[in-house]
Image (cartoon, rainbow, N blue to C red; front, side, top):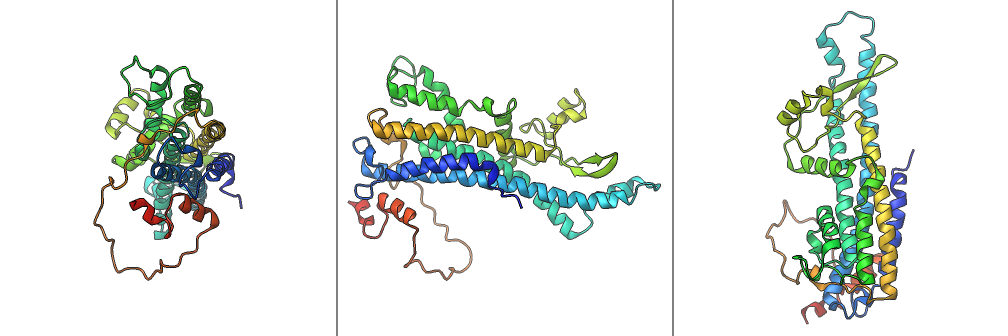
Length: 368
């Protein structure tokens, strides 16, 4: 069986290497990132450093989830189409009506209906996980580069906005002051370099692949579902199954898509390649982009460690403690019978918690 982690391994290995560099700089005594001392207070350093490590692992996790979803989509599609084509083949050479032909490609059992529902879930999961990886990667880039942003609210759109501002940001422009290092400095040049690499997504796939991905994710999460159109596939002139073609313009609504699509023919509403081919391509593009960005982020982190004055970490990037909203939701059902008093932590997790001053013998320092 193929390892679903293999397609994203080029990116996850580089991200893991970056994370290892960051973890090596944790200061379990003073708190946070050791060489950020003098830039920000230990509380900001502890929170920002921990969020940076979590964002790195989050990128890798999202990529693996996306790859698993692509693999499950392929397997589910194969299973469905095996049953569909078997029924369709039984009609070959017979005089049949349209109802029989439609029935051959309609779910014939609750189990088959369940697989069809799973197929939709895998489609959404591919889109969500890939876009999630990019949103998390944006946080990594902006923290590592020391750009002034609201880190917790950062996503790929924010990174793109900051990348557009960077070349023109300076004392004479009506832009946020202090978002970047001073123009003309080496630190500013390094900030610009990593931002340019991050937004050079066109080098990693066909035209508009990244906008299509992000708009598809947004539509899947926030918008009414589109009409699901099924198209029959053939093999050697015989029915081989069904696919649900992906819409070429994911941010259009159905009426707009049909009206505008009618001008170029009904088929122009959809992408020509199969969904599986598109998902595999998107996975490869995001992996390629993430690899390039994480590699540059690691190089920049090592440079900053050797010269902490290169870029001064901006403390405004983290909200003050106790400013987040508090919800009173207590969950559903009775409390689960779990024991929280004695938890075994892996050494790496314990080191992270000590650097964030979250262990029992440290937590009181947050109140001092």
